[in-house]
Length: 504
Image (cartoon, rainbow, N blue to C red; front, side, top):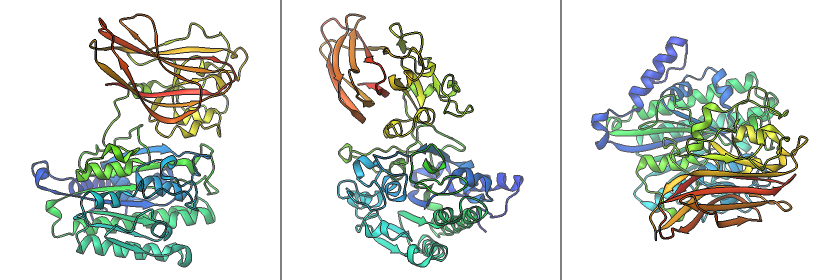
């Protein structure tokens, strides 16, 4: 009997979730002896909000018993919100500025430098049994999932229609999962995307979701029926490459609509039931696979990924529950909570040089999230922070100036005092997204024992979506160090974003 029955009532849904917890979570006493295995299922163009509305008990049960992280895609000029970039981000664990795929032509691909997670496994240990089955053939022919994978099965949904090809993909997946011994498997189902393009996200799209949910259920049945299942620790990951605008369908653009919404869902050891993290990125599929299989990520791989079950320690993310709805902004829906002036414990913001006018949300350094900030003004690269996660700090002179009195911006973000030892070298690590215009200036400063500011770095040119590592030598007599980010000489210019400061 399937651990994920297809008919659902309120009571049945609860039973399904309980069954999922039993069938796909290893007993704690046996965990050390179990063999880790992973199934990643990609469902093209799948809006999670539509999954919630559909009769999709398998996905519902995985979400109830696992971790579901949602995020927004990048925009041009980084990449379209389309399948080529989306699946490349999922496969490689890096963003489009690294893997090079900006659209469905796959021009500029850098899979030799950034191979897919199955190829990485083969490179790390050729004894891994890897499998990919899909019916968007270009994911194999273009090398998104590369030739080093042990078994690649390809159908052509573009030529033969995705309804029947999805059935073939499912049948092959069921056979291999039940009868063979893959360690890591990727399965692609494409019909949801085709339907949304053809007729939008209405009734037919819902039916396609329910069909794919049943196909996923068959794969999980096959896993549970394995003769070695009791000695295995299975991680199930489900994800999508992009969404679709609602209700007309379509994607590829830069609006903050369903087309840019993606999600990563994981059920298995270490993935907390019902957790909805704010720090997820689409690139985290690869890191989630590596963590479950015990593969150490080499820093030289230069990935943009972490395991879905690992939470960021950035103190800015602790502000999420206190984010407010709009104040002066008019283009952001009144229900979207996404900004605050209140700094985390130990942090502060100096607004003493700021004028009294301007747009309230952006008066001095503020704390916000991508949903809110990118809605403030689209197509100005606010969507392309790429390595920002959750809540981050923003000094946005461009938006501040959109209301009378906002012509002068001068504000400093101040960290807590970090303990230091004289004569040592400290490294300031943070993510920055800086766009330069006119005379605006960004400065990274440090102060020892509350003394004079010392310049570490000055920004006067674009530094987009960059992870910085700046070294500072601690002078004699110093016991504490404060880091400051000053943004000034700015009027109707661009902005500076800071996230995840770590002093090591």
